[in-house]
Amino acid sequence: MSEALKALQPQDEGKYRLLNEFYSRLKEGTILPQAEDIRQFAQIVGLKEISGKARRDMLPSLMWFLIDQPAERVRDDVTRAEAVSEKQRQKGFSILTDKLLRN
Image (tube, one colour):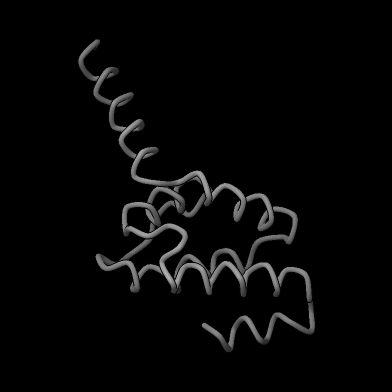
């Protein structure tokens, strides 16, 4: 993945810096720390299918998807990643449960 990011650098320095920092934080686990966080984030940004059970297996698919997106969108998507957490997932499950129980 590092090689793909380095290949991006001459084309778009700003996008490279943004994604390189994001990837570093993903590897450290300081952002999207759980596999479910990555799945939820992938859905939010439009990556409908992300394979892998382990978190580390999902990172390449997510990063390739982001590399292919326009820089402005990547900026917005990376900002959204901060909001994805266990608390957000639980809120989503609560909403889904409420909807299912009402039908």
